[in-house]
Image 1: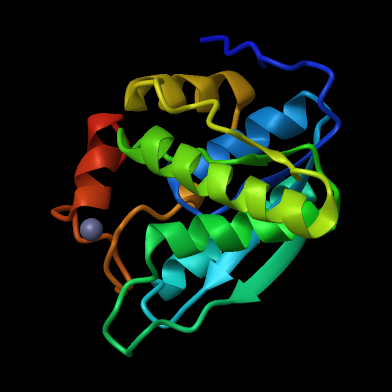
Image 2: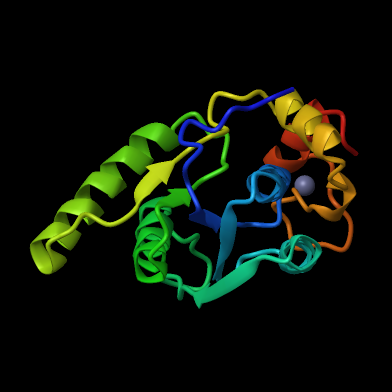
Length: 188
Ligand SMILES: [Zn+2]
């Protein structure tokens, strides 16, 4: 499988890296094109510890620059809203001076949410700073899960390093949304 970058002149990006299959393979794909990747990680209490370990391993394997940001949740049991995650990522990417913020998520609602957040953030940037900051890039959003696995194979990227389970356990549960999505790509 071959994915052609839609802007081959790109030199540097910020990538929202979770340590899951998609963002990890995306990091390998960008690196293989000699694009400098800053791995932006959001840390919060509900993030599985094994996911953090997986991200650390991917960062070390690919030699990525990293930015770690702690995002306090509204309360102890709450997820961080996606709008907040994207706003934080865009703000960090702007500070890094990269050309794009890359989201490797395959969720079908991401283009709509991402476009809305980007529009708002870019407009606020323009009012405050006179420029609109980095573009948002979703290179995988219409790629099927099997396509991501195929790309990983092409890149000889060890997908076993990644962590997909939504739960904070020592072994992937095999039943949550993250695990089922992973299995759909034929990865245990
Ligand atoms: Zn699971």
